[in-house]
Length: 384
Image 1 (cartoon, one colour):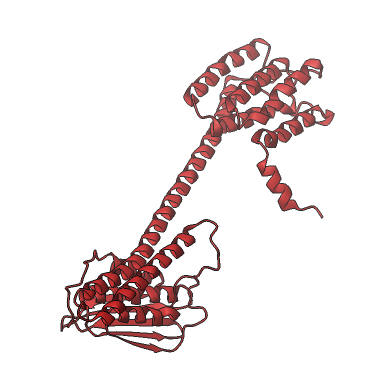
Image 2 (cartoon, rainbow, N blue to C red; image 1 turned 180 degrees about the vertical axis):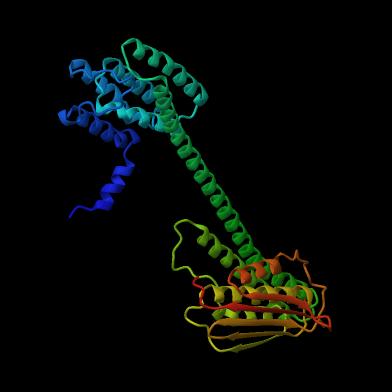
C-alpha cells in the first residue's frame, strides 16, 4: 500500500520551486484546451484572435514563471506582467492570463525589498497599457479600466494581508519559544537550587560540628564520613540533573519522589538535625508530579531547618489522600543559627510556584515560639 504520509513528507522536503512548478504547468496545459479558449482575463474588450505560434510564447510567459513565485517573486511578477500585456495587445485572451492576480498575490506576500517602488511602477505601467488598448480599438469605458485596476490592487492587498498574517504568526512563535526557554531556565535553576542547597547546607553544618569533636576521634571520624557521603550524593544528583538536560537522555531516568522521603530524612538526621517523620497512607499510582513536588517541599523545609534552626526538633508529616497530598514541616525554634550559611529566599518562592502550578496551596509562616511551619496541599493525579 502507498504510504500517503511518507509521500507528503517527501513532497514537503522538495525545493519550493519544484512544489510550485506543477500549478504553472497545469495552467499552461489547460490554456491549450480548445474548450477554454477565450476564457481568460480581458481588458479593453478587443476581438479575440485565433491561436498561433506566438500564443504559445504568451502562455509560457504567463504560466512558467509561477514556479518561482515564492523564490523570486519580483522575477515572476515582471515576466507574468509582460505576458499579460502581450496577451491583451494580441487579444488571445488565453486562460493563462488569470496568472496575473496570482503573481500579484505572491509578490505581495513574499517580496522582501522595494515593495513600494514595485507598486508605483506597476501603477504607472497600467496607464500606458490602457492608452495603447484604446488606440487599438478597445471599446472599454474609462470606469472599466478603473475597476480592473482596483481588482489588481485587491490581489496585491490579499498578498500583503497574507504576509502580515505570516509575520504575526512568526512573532507569536518567537514569543512562545522565548517563554519556553525562560520557563526551562527557571525550572533548571530551581532544580539546581534544591539539589545544591540541601547537600551543601548539610555539609556546612556537619563540617562546623566537626570543629568541636577533636576530643572525640570516633565521632569526628563519623562526622567527616558523613560530610564525604553528602558530597558524593551532591555530585551524583548534579550528574543526574545534567543527564536530564541532555537531548538524548534516557527516558527511564527518574526524578525524586515522595517514596524517597525516608532517605532524605535520614540524611538530615546524620547532619545533626533531630527529625520526627510521620507518613499516613501511600502515594497513588497517578500521583505523578505531585510526588516530585512533595519531595521538594520536604527537602527545602529541612534545608531551612538546618540553616536557621540547627539542632531544633523538627517534625515532618506527610499524608497521602485520594485526591491530594498534605505536607507539614515545622520546627520549634530552639536550635542554633551558628552554622547557617544564609539564604536568598528563592527556595520558598520556587516551592510556592511549583505547588500553585499544580493547583495546590502553599504557606510558610513563623511560629509564635520562634519556629517555622511550612504547609502544602498538593493535588494528586498530575502526570509527570
